[in-house]
Structure formats: structure tokens, C-alpha cells
Image 1: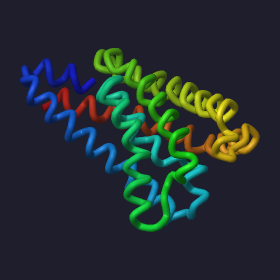
Image 2: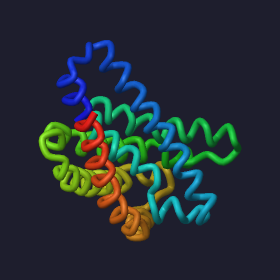
Image 3: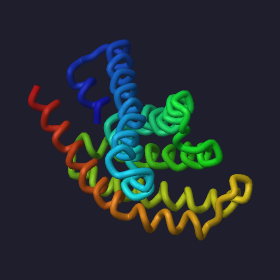
Length: 190
């Protein structure tokens, strides 16, 4: 969506890269900050229930497209791990980090695949977000089934966490598209 807006405004390649870099940095920062706020407000279980890191990644995919969105999806858990490790409480935990990188990468790729459609009609953000959630969580479950023993994670454990996180997915399935729709209105009215 952002690419089309910038192209329509005749922004140079250098300007597009600068804009996308700034948006990506803000989304990655939100991917670190929002989980911390959720954990402060409702405790550690809030992360499993509300999946707060996912929201900025979903928005990133919808706004930035597949490649830039993928960068946000990969860097969000990495930066969160680095920053929270320095504070003494790494999130995500090291053994979960590779799985989250893959899962959030899928979230960003699938939602990013909808960016052109979203720029034409922002209502496409709803199926884009929902399909990315299904693909990301499904891919997470698959990778745990294949490699979970390396990280002491079982399919049953992750399936339980997926069930606990349904409320977060529902909130994000509404909130992320609404944010995209509102951002679409703002940038089209400038």
C-alpha cells in the first residue's frame, strides 16, 4: 500500500527507501514496546493470550509489502530478544526465537502479498490479515512438529498456546485491518 502511495506522489527511489526504513523501524520498535506494555498490564500470560508482537508485523506486511514486511517480521523477534536480554528477561526465549522468526516471517509474507489489493481497496486488509494468521500459526505448528524436540516444545503444548491466543488473533483480525483502513484514508487525503 505504501509503495503505491509513494509512487502516486512521485517520490524518488531514495525517498521511498527512507520512508519505508522509517516505517519499518517504528513497527519494529512497536513490536518490542507493545509486548512489554501488555506484560506489565496483564502479566506474562498476556503474551500468549494477546500475541502483542503480531500486530505491528501484520500492519507491516499490509503497508510495506512482502520484502519490507518480511524484514519487519524477522527483525521484530530478534530485536525484542536482544533488547529484553539486555534487561535480563529475554522475550521471546532463546529456544522459541527461531520458531517466532519463521512464524512472523510467514505472517509478513502472506499479509504483504495483499498489499497491492489493499492499495486498491483497503477492505482487502481483512482477508490479508486473517489468511496470514492462519498461515503463520499453521506454519509455527508445523515447524514445532518437525523440530520442536530441539527446543523442548511439543505439538500439544503449542496447540494449547494457539488455543489460548485465539482471543488475541480475533482482536488483531479486526484491529490490524481497521488501522490499515484508517491509515489508507489519511494518506489518500493528504
